[in-house]
Image (tube, rainbow, N blue to C red; front, side, top):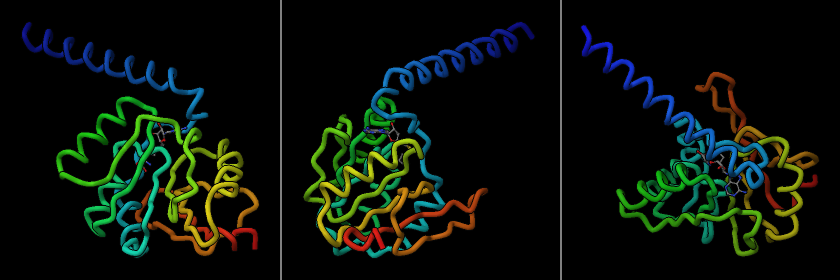
Length: 188
Ligand SMILES: C[S@@+](CC[C@H](N)C(=O)[O-])C[C@H]1O[C@@H](n2cnc3c(N)ncnc32)[C@H](O)[C@@H]1O
C-alpha cells in the first residue's frame, strides 16, 4: 500500500515538473510566437490536407511554426516532397527533428523564428498559428511570396484575404476550416 502511495506521489511530481518546464518554455518564447502555442494540428486535419491537395508539383514548401513535425512528415511521406520548417519551441523542435531522423526524411527544421526568414522562394506555405498574428503574417507573405504561391492556413483566416477554397474538416470537434489562398488572387 505504501509503495502504491509513493509511486503515485512520484508520478504526480514528475507530471508537475513536466508541466512546469513546458510552461517555462512557452513563457520564454512568447515574444516570438505572439501567442501561437505548441498545439499540434489534429491528425484528421493533416490527413484532410494531404488527401485534398496534390503537393507533388511544389518545389519549395515551408511550414511556419512546424510544431512536432506531423504535417511536414505526413506530406513528405505521401508525396516525397521535402518541407522546410521553422520552430522556436525547443520541445517541439526536438520532437520534429526526432521524427525527421526516425523516418530518414529530407525535410529540414530550423530552430529559428519564421519572422526572420525570407520566404521569397516558397511556392507553398502552411501554418496553424493564432488570430492575433495573422494580419502581420499576411503583410509579410504579401511582401515576399510570388504570384501563384499557395498559402494554407489551418483554422485562422488572413483578414481581408479571399480564399480560393476552404476545406472543412468535419471529423474534428469544431469542424475546423482550412483556408487556401492563391497569391495574386487573394485580394479578390
Ligand atoms: C499551433 S502550433 C502548430 C504546429 C504545427 N504547424 C502543426 O500543425 O502541428 C504553432 C507552432 O508555431 C510555433 N511558432 C509560433 N511562432 C513562431 C515563430 N515566430 N517562429 C517559429 N515558430 C513559431 C509555435 O512554437 C508552435 O509550435
